Structures are given as structure tokens and as C-alpha cells.
Length: 391
Image (cartoon, rainbow, N blue to C red; front, side):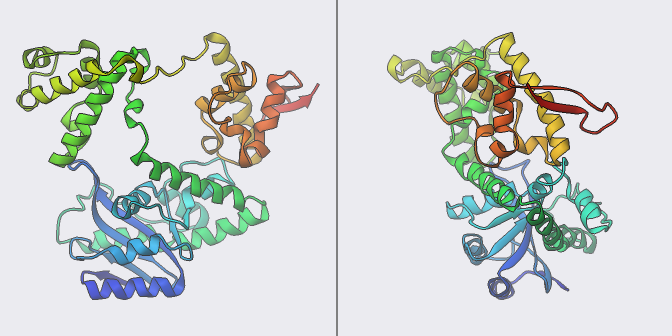
């Protein structure tokens, strides 16, 4: 396999033409996210069966030939833990890539290991040790050293070989469709970030009133716009905990804003007027347009049933050799409890009752909740010690 470092547009265009011919490529990136609003793309790595290549995006004026390839449903792009690679595509094209394979997800579809790092995955599947010594590199700096380039090339060198072996095993287990549905779900989740209510992901907002949520939403929207204009990470513009505090205190003047604890820094004073204006927009919102408070969880009974299912799920995943994190989270289990036990059926059905998850555990867990199936300790020395029994 030939290895090279591309720094010219013509060589990059030739590489993209080669990828279109072979119709399959491993892809990875190196990026820095600490200093800018969106992660800064610093290096791109590609591997086909014939070539292993690094591309310097700082030197290539037009990267669109590659983004067009990611949108081509006839070309398979294989990544490892590739949410950021998908995100780069969505950012640059406003479209989602169409034929993505993620070997990190694929590994979790036939083993309990997820997420498994690339170095460990190469060792497990290919029996090859790689260095992984450049994880703290500042990829913005130039020139890159030979060891940095070699490290970057290793990140894609084994990806196609890993997928070959995973795919064969998934086909044998009749799970290739499971994996493909999870690849698509990951892509859809990343693509949906542009329209998702990301302000609802701020920790601690569950105790806020509707009016406080309206203020928080306006503050979050201001923070995103300010961060984009200044090209800096959003949390460096204003921390999440300060957003919450301002939503509760609702300062109406510049002096009120800077009187808030930790808000007396000079960079905060500079934007205090904008912050007060965002607060006022939330306060002025008509009552009929206030964001809803998310339904609170039931008390102890929902928690207990969710924990019961979590124990059963952990055992089942070991028994079936599939990663628990891919099947469902604790929130997914509680959703199933609310849906099936308490009849709260607003919105989409629980994820555990759909697709391949229903095949693995959906009906089983509903029968457990109905008391039709019990489980007990059958072999305490087994990696899946519980046994499910129909009553």
C-alpha cells in the first residue's frame, strides 16, 4: 500500500478520482475544538486497498470533491467513532452523508464492547499493535513531523480490514441489518443537531418554570450567535451554569447582570447589555408561546422498574454478545416503563419496541413488566448469571 502526504489541489483531485473508482474508503480527521465555535479541521486521512494518504486541508483550496463523495450513496465511507467526520460533512454541505459504516458501532453489534478505542480495536480484530503516541498533538501547527504523519496514517490503515472481518461475522449472525440501521441512526442524530432544541440539553434545567425556560432559551440563542460571530466555543462565551443562574435571576439592567455571581469579568461586562436584552425577550414572550416543561418522571416506582430492567438488560447483552449502550440507555428503559405500565403514550413509541431492539429485548421486557416472565440467578459463575423463565 503506497503512503503519501498531499498538499496540492491537483493531487487531492486525483485522490478523489481514485476513490470514485474503487468505491470504498476509510476516512478519519484530526481536529482542534478548544479555540473555535466549530472544530477546526486540521488533517484528513484516507485509505483504500491501494493507497494510504494524509491531506493537509490548510493547503487545499477546494475540498468539495471529497464532500461530494460523502454524499454519494454508491461509495462506502468507513469511519471509527466518526460523529465528527459526519459533522464536518453536514457543516460543509448542509446534507447528511449517505453510505457510512462505523467500525466502532459495528464492534458493539457483536460484542459487549462499546465504545472501543481505535488502538484496542486494531489489536482485537487485526492482532496488530499501533503506537497511539500523538494523541496530545496540536494539529494546527506546521510543519507536521514524520511521526505525526505516521500516527495519522495508522488511524485509517487498518479500518477496511477491520470492517471486512466485522461484516463477515455480522452476516453470519444475521446482524448486518442491525448494524446498518445504527449507522444510519448515528448519521441522522448528527444531521438533526442543526434543528434540535439544543438548549434543552443544558444540565439542571428540569427545575425551571416555563418563564425561566423561555429566558434560558433566549440566552442560549444569544450565546450561540455571539459565539459564532466571535468564532469561539460557546461555553467560553458564557458557561452553562451561568445561563441557568441568569434564567432564574432574570436581571433587567446592566448593573443587575454584572451583580450576578461570577459575572463581573470584563468580557461579561462588555456584553451585559445584550444579555439583559435576551432576558427581556424571554420575559416579554406571551404566555401561550412559553416552552413546555418536560414531564417529570414518576417517583420511586418508575426508578425501581427502570433499574430492574437495567439489570435484565445487562445480563441479556452479555448473553447475546451485543453492547448494552447501543441497545438502550436508562432513559430508554424508563420510557418503556412509562409507555407500557402507565400508559403515557405521547410522542414516538419507545426505542426498545422498534427495529432490531424489539427483536432482542422489546417483547421480553414488556412480558417482564406484565409479570409473565421472571428471572433468577441460574449460574453465579457465568458472565450472564440470570435466567429468564416464562411463568
